[in-house]
Length: 473
Image 1 (cartoon, rainbow, N blue to C red):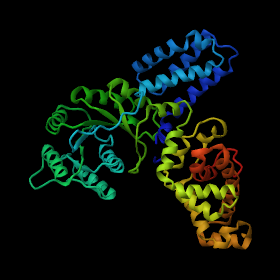
Image 2 (image 1 turned 45 degrees about the vertical axis):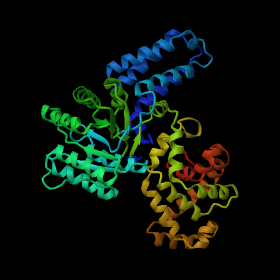
Image 3 (image 1 turned 90 degrees about the horizontal axis):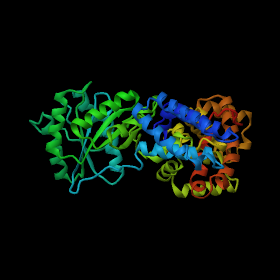
Image 4 (image 1 turned 90 degrees about the vertical axis):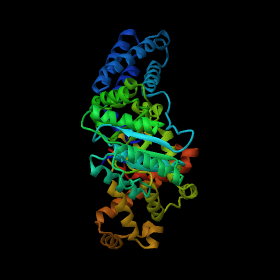
């Protein structure tokens, strides 16, 4: 199942690259002494890994020159931890390629801020417009959307449906407004009259770049004076996305990039190339089909995840945004007092569902230590629904004391929840294991801020996974 949501599933795109780079670093750690020869061999492997990930050859060349210059220095070769030094250098250079720091969405000095979304047909502009509107509304703005794709009625209808689902306004056009420029101006006028501070313009696309398309976009730009022109690129198309972005920038002057479908199985080269080739920052990443599956792009976090270091900052942010603080503290107390019941288990499942895809959460964990096998976990999202159904079919007494659930009760619970006795047995086994794991996670392993909030939610998530060798399988 594809993950739906903070730089979470982005790592899917970089799986192969990440594995190859981690293998290079592991080989370096295995060397008794680091020499210029085995360092050269490691750098060759890094170069091949980047090229196989479909990173633009010019970007690879520049990246390797920078890495080699630093990695072949005497300080690294004589270091007591050369593999760590090389890892640090590669991470720093990846961050530079990806953009050094997060590039935030700019706003106009005087509202409304106009944001044009441009790109080829099929890149995900319309969906991204809706996702961006939702993100803006969740971050202190009041957006209005407008589709100026007058050539494809389905596109305008699609945005109208998205607006209805999100309960956000859309400008449908006044009588006599049938041209892109008229619709865009009308939307801006509507925003000013209704106090909306942001206008998101979903523009038309083509199957390929042509002069008519560019003339239309240039006219919109000259009339609307947009603060942002975001190029929407399909990450699955690899270097084609990079070439299109470069061409749009040369002819239109884009200010940023939204890379969609980063939860896919592409090789990741577009993400590592597009900023360097165009000179414009990656601002957002589309990581799933749901409306909340759009995230600000954090270069340093993505670089860390490519190298298997995880993205705990994004994980903490996601938990803080979605998990109720009081409930989390209450759950931690129950765990420490060994008072964690099946009803609590069910409530935590419901809380956890607010965090999005479990696979996306796993991708944020460091691929080291006790979490090194998480990347191999296979998560059945429907399992959570089955868990809730089974526990709902229990009596309050059974939820409070699972030890009373004998064979007859298990058959009744299975019948009431539309499941099997084997599934009820499996749940009870998982619950018992989760209690043990959560007590350790809540009390010590995650600790502090993470322990209080994650001890309840993340741990139950781990207990639901089908990890190779896990005790509850």
